[in-house]
Image (cartoon, rainbow, N blue to C red; front, top):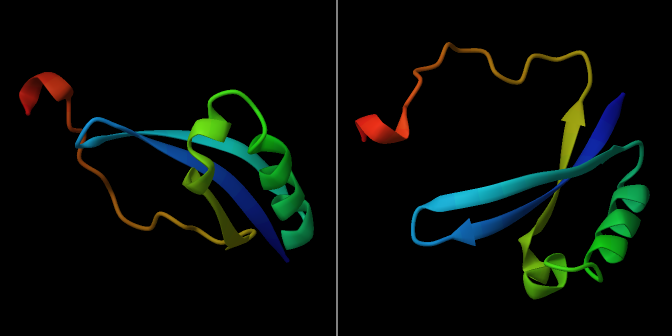
Amino acid sequence: MEVFVVQHTHLLGDTREDIKLIGVYSTVELAQEAVKRMRERSGFCDAPDGFSIDRYPIDVDRWTEGYIAVHPDNI
């Protein structure tokens, strides 16, 4: 089984991104309908190309390695 994740990315300056999770849908068609609805809303209509739809299998680890925390004051 798989799901479809809709996100919107808006660039903040040169290096930062603001990523919003719009929703998780059972079909690609429902995900596409969500993008159509959100493109009309405030803010999103200013960046209509910022949407993405990604297919994810469920019950599968997506992040399989550790991580390193990077704090803005240490950059």
